[in-house]
Image 1 (cartoon, one colour):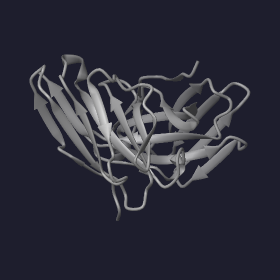
Image 2 (cartoon, one colour):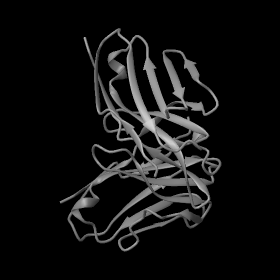
Image 3 (cartoon, one colour):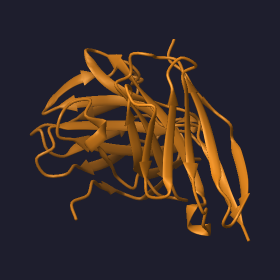
Image 4 (cartoon, rainbow over the protein chains, first blue to last red):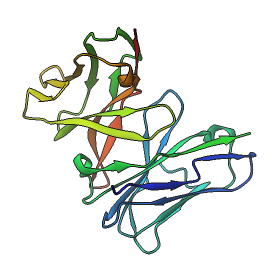
Length: 115
Length: 113
């Protein structure tokens, strides 16, 4: 069964260090989303890609976060420098059409702990 | 503004029905969603309902939608220990010309014998 792959599953990093997460969406899915889920809260959209283009990054803290999807397939989310408040689960999701959440699939997530 | 609210905890006995409630703000959402998250895992789409429907049933799951009150509920019949998880309600919101999902904080369902 097709699934959204994320790595690593867990990451511990010291504050002020750089950290990166990787996501491989379901084959053929043009839309890719990165969500952040702080413990005890629901996921919040950080960035949405349509193919290789960013279509929504209004909630992305651009002073320290960056996201890219160079070939319109897999994607990397980077944080530099990491802060204690960045500790959270980072979820990637993909769908065949933008905003088509009835057919969106989420990955297992990367749990980041900043110490 | 956009907001989705849920109660945080629900405890039920195995075999009973569970009802998880949600209120939302954006009446323009085309669909409303219920997701399940098991410990340490990502989100699994459980079910969704089209905004012009009042009810949708899918095996043990029943979704009720009251558009007037902007109230959504998820009923799980014959709740099992495997149903223990966090359940998120989500509505659609517009951002940058595209839909995005806006989630509630989640309801933690605990099923006990």
